[in-house]
Length: 293
Image (cartoon, rainbow, N blue to C red; front, side, top):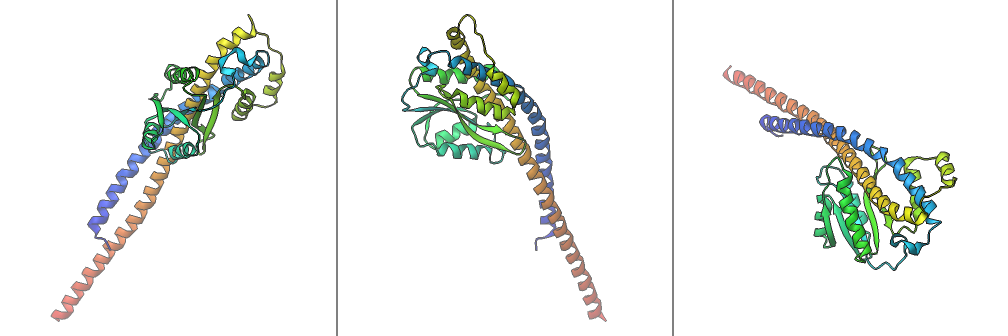
């Protein structure tokens, strides 16, 4: 059995750890609420843009815009959204597992230091890495989107896809891969957005309404497609931030609860050790008095 001094030191260490994890849990909870509100606020706008694109895609020939042109996929372009810091549970590990399942040639643009380190460590082709703040300003994400679109237009990559932790709720963040370019499956994207936003019959009815475009569908499409891609990537990064703070809050709460349980066990062990020491002293005193008698 460890000495009472060693147990006291461990108790002090565990108390300090519990205090730190509790503070980190509170900070993550505060950031999580703001990130969730930002992520949820942008979903109706993204869904409306997807419906407009669906209406436009039926009226414009695919060859009239490079975003709608089908071509042979030789190299995939993937945006990987991870965290800058750790202590977020299995969030990043689940994303990395999804990346390792990609067997076809691919080049990566990474948001977050953890992702950049993983891509470099596994010797994958890294085009660029970026960092964004917790506020996830549109201007920050626009740089990433425009970079990948430029790589797509120049033929460096033949697709633009994004991997991010999709926010379901505070406890569930699902690693997801979403194709963005070329926009050959925009209807699938719309269905996915509806499911994610919880849209029902009202959205389906609105999709059936006829839309009029001025000055003409081609001009509107040329202006809307880059905006849609930028907005879609921004939405997913907002989603990733909400997932990050949620995962970190849950991880810190779990660490705090484990520290509390460990503290209770150590306190019990300390009391047993102290009681054993007291009993031993009493026995020694009794034995000494018996010997003296």
